[in-house]
Image (cartoon, rainbow, N blue to C red):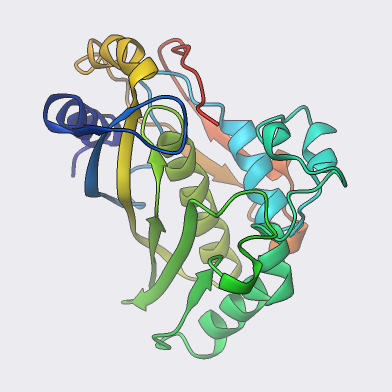
Length: 263
């Protein structure tokens, strides 16, 4: 199976060379392709880019904020020196009825873990953040909005569906953090790791990111060996995990590439 660097950069090159160019809700036009799919066997590799540095700890902090803390309070992230939600912070200091708010309201993690332990062949194991009555009162319609879970041969498989993916910045971050989520859920439900599939409905590169992506593509034959993910196996309750219980081992990477987020 190809590494994440190989799969990701193949798609990035395809977007730049053959993508549809048009306007969008931001001031920066995009090159985009629909229905891009990346798939990994989590037994074989942990998917994180090595051709540029990914802020792994930041990704884990946001993941835990959404699914463990089930919070919408931006100040909780800011206290951990995470500022990725600052642009969407409402006057009350939250992101409204988005992400963690929806996870908590519908007890989605609790229901998933219960089903995986008690009815693993359930075909309705879904975490769905796209709850229509709550979309307009949230700061941002969720991008990574759906995960679908499956157990086959004692292995936990997960499909992540992303409606909109900033391929230069957001997608590598999202792939990595949701792969961490699969590791955590598999551990607390006593399942082995299976297939992780990341589906992006609208995979786009903003016009002001093109030069940065060209620099990234120059590194496509210079990738390092993927690192290993370590999680504290002494923790058996999902809600007991903290950022210090989740680490990358032997993460070798090239430098970060500066590109701007379009709000």
